[in-house]
Image (cartoon, rainbow over all chains, first blue to last red; front, top):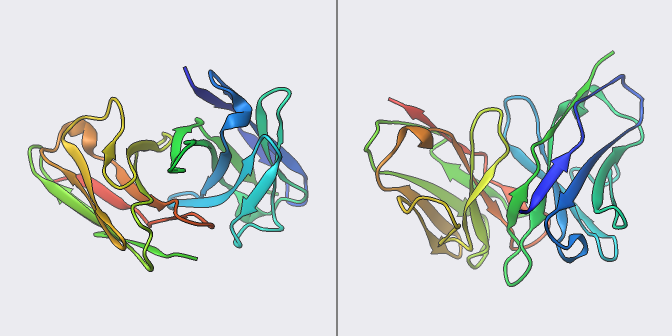
Length: 120
Length: 107
């Protein structure tokens, strides 16, 4: 069974660094890209970027480029989303999702989400 | 970036109704479009890929159609568990972009 299990909720102060994780299981981790999606409170879904775990090649949305870093550790089948300095506006739910592999690249499996709260 | 515009933003309907949502792309995206259902407090769930391919385990009352710039998601007979927010997502090129969502509410 394919599963993406994300790390637990985080509460941070502005300016702190943060890394959240997404562990894949039930499939070959390096064969499927991973995307991250943000959902701010009461708002819609925003695609942030994706990574190919095989070679760590990334694409970012211009809205998030330079603000976050997506990475993986393929030895443990885990993808990461990290911030060097969080802001209050980073308060949101963050989802990881696996891309289907083939002619189409839709997001077929999703993690349960990680709630990030940034408050002084 | 490709803009995805969903309509309506919200919709009130009754159990048993047939409802249709629309998603329009600002440029042609072939059929590289998925529909996702999200219930409160839950992760999104893929319903339809490649504009019209129903995912395994998704009830057959859901159907999708379209190509190019105009797409529709239809629920043929609403069930209580269908009340949720629905999003389209273009996976044609980067950055991927979601529509703003259609919230389906009980009348």
